[in-house]
Image (cartoon, each protein chain N blue to C red):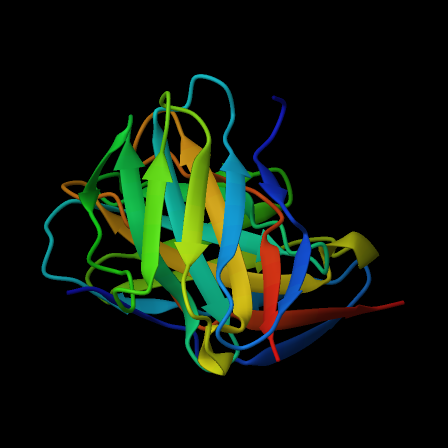
Length: 114
Length: 113
């Protein structure tokens, strides 16, 4: 079984500042993948970033980067130079290499203020 | 198509009626997934298709729920005798390669009154 915990129901950041969203997980799998998805009011889940658990190097996509701590089972998302368009629900998710179903956390609502 | 298309976008139905939700995945994506998103339960996995077959139906909440996929493309999720607890957003996603992340549609918001 796999579980994902996002301990911050809501976060707020000022435009141009940096914010970090927390995610911890639990899994008995040795090989798995971690994801952050963004869900704006349009409801469509958009893939933000992906991390392969066997890679030590933290994934980066433009202003988005992760801090992946495998031993601690932690996978936080850092958003730099926050923009108004970053406001959304952010979901952390895990998928085993041997499986196909994403297990999601409950989400963090990010508010970006001018 | 360019993205995953779901219809209808919103559906209001009376308790006890049957509903069909449609998902049109990205062309060439062999894997298709249905999830349910509700306030109390978060995002729940419902069913997974690889081609036309569904190797995992374990997430379907009851025998009132069924899904099919034809021609390795369009999928329909059917809910019979709808109940108020079925009210949720039903999200469909597709992928070409597993473990690389899915492309989601915008969902169908189902309201049972």
